[in-house]
Image (cartoon, rainbow over all chains, first blue to last red; front, side, top):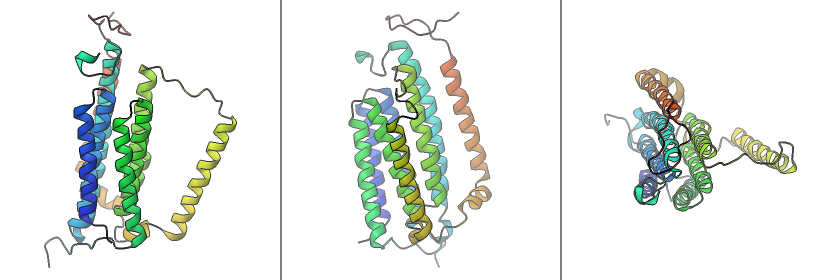
Amino acid sequence: MSAGLNLVLVGSAVLFAVGAFALVARRSAIVMLLGTQFMFAAASIAFVAFGRFGLGARNQNAGAAVSLFVGATAIAELAVGLAIAALLYREHRSFAVDADHR
Amino acid sequence: MPLIGALPQPITSAPLVLFIYVVLILMLGSALASVLLRNTLYAIGAFAASMVLVALLYLAIAPFLLFAVQLLVFTTVSAALLIRLLRETTGLRPATLGPLSREWIIGAAVSAAVLALLEVVLGATAWPVGFCCGFIVGFGPVLTNTYPVGLAVLVVILASAALGSGLLLAAPTLPSPRGGGSVRRRE
């Protein structure tokens, strides 16, 4: 039994699918933001996995560095998204982004 | 010799492989729970748990700095932002228990014991970092020497996001035409 690129990429793909499901199927702005965070995390994991198993000995740190940048960008996106969600709640007393369910 | 160096081999150490499988399964389970739970507070808790598990996955396959940043910065900041949003909107209040109540003391003692145990295990055996990631040394200097432009862009992005979210929250809101009841009105 071994753990290589395929295993981590499968986990990353499933996590991305969970995030995409939250973004498409849920109406709450908070859960949709959580979905985008999962999609960012899945991309980070894929970068790290390629850096660790797939790039070669000379580029071991490249995937981790890109993952660090992706994580910080996700935090910035979350801050702006939560501010928008707070404005949405002030206006409609609900986090629902669908006008029919406010 | 390949252009980018020899490809690293997959991890074959049985405890580490088991650790990665368990972390992946728990991470996907908590992510699914976070998406499916109706209670927003529980969903945020499951989200924080899945981010901690992502950090543990990084501990097994990535430099230690990435694990520390994911655990201490990304997870904490995300959870704090979400909890603060809930407190400012839906009226979530802090716990009514005092800081010196029995529950807080027991929780702090258990947390300290678990952290001390983790510290002892990491310090004594360097597991799982020493198993797999001994080849990755000096990630911090590599980061600052190889990606200075990326780091500068990152600082600009984070500052812009902080400024933008602050301006959004400080902006006055008009009364809703549907009677939603805005909190603040334009002067």
